[in-house]
Image 1: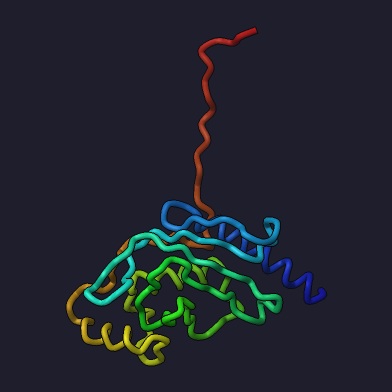
Image 2 (image 1 turned 60 degrees about the vertical axis):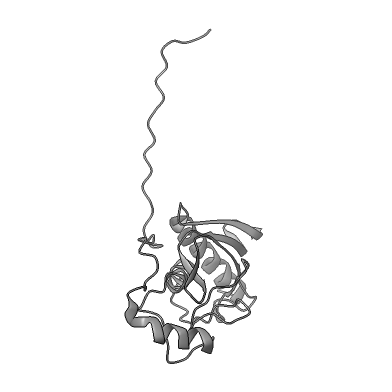
Length: 177
């Protein structure tokens, strides 16, 4: 396979994961590319996240996801569009998500779910040892034992599982001829 064929196969598989996570919590639209070969997404994420000390919260976030030309060798570029940006140790002050380590085996939907877990302040994946935002990290460490984390407990969708839909046929009471 050529590098472009490999990339297209990956984009197609990632699109399927994105379809699987679409719902009330995560909605999205393709901004660039033709499905299933989408190269940029605009997400709306409906989870409670911290946007400032206090803590101050927001429950809906617009996020831009750009797939780089050398993907999957390079990670997607994920940036918060909503302002103020997320106040979290693993988000830069300019709104870019610091994902830590990029694993090529991690599908885009799985990557997005990991990012959403940081918005929720999931303690299992918040990395205070390598902060992108030192001020948020200090605040987090000083508030860690106050039982405010995670700030949202919504169960996130599984990108690897297709969501079930039930289609019931419409019963007609009469036919018009």
